[in-house]
Length: 104
Image (cartoon, rainbow, N blue to C red):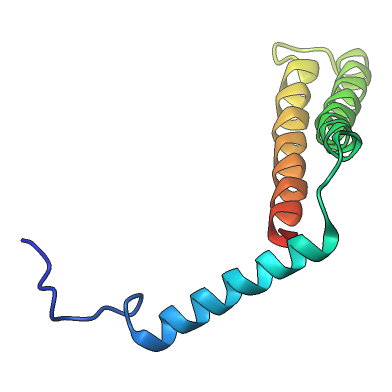
């Protein structure tokens, strides 16, 4: 089941290779022009990711506590909305990290 070295897949075509190399060169030039990022940038990004998870989680807890007081029952709205808040926060953090990595 080894791939025949004579065949070329879509990722191995010479024109695709040229585009990939060109994109990497462009990214290197942008990084050199921008300079090195400082530790403050890293701390700021860390804070952004932290808050992007914390805020939806706290909002979910607050709405859950309110819903538990208003409609008590077998299901804990607080726990349910806590989990939903954490999930939304993680998606939000993933989005910010992905956006930042695309700039590199």
